[in-house]
Picture (cartoon, rainbow, N blue to C red):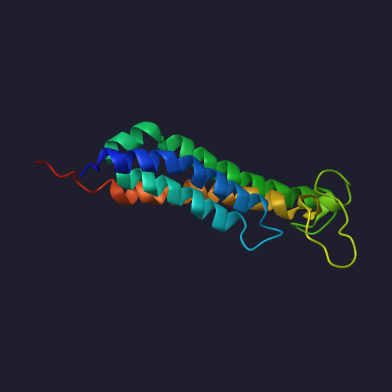
Length: 155
């Protein structure tokens, strides 16, 4: 069943905000409650909003399953390669090798009350991005697969 034009327009308007808020939750996961899983779920919820407001055929024309599978695979590979890189640096799997580089995410946390800074996460922000991509792609694929068996109402 197709929703009204108001519902479709509202869903189209809210979809980018869901994606941006999901990315915010992913990138700030080491400082605030949230992280990769929660941010990926927020982004997948935005996709579910689009699916509810439109027909399955229309959504599969916009969202390609191959792109979602690539997103999921890229997130998994990012997570695994970050862990394997620490093995290459003679550290344990998922050892925090980025803190020694002193780059963007390798800053040392100051002593005392700290409001938090994005550049103090070490390996955790990279892992959050990998998990967020994995969860976004996986949950969206699950939603699409669940809805693929539903037949559309015919008037």
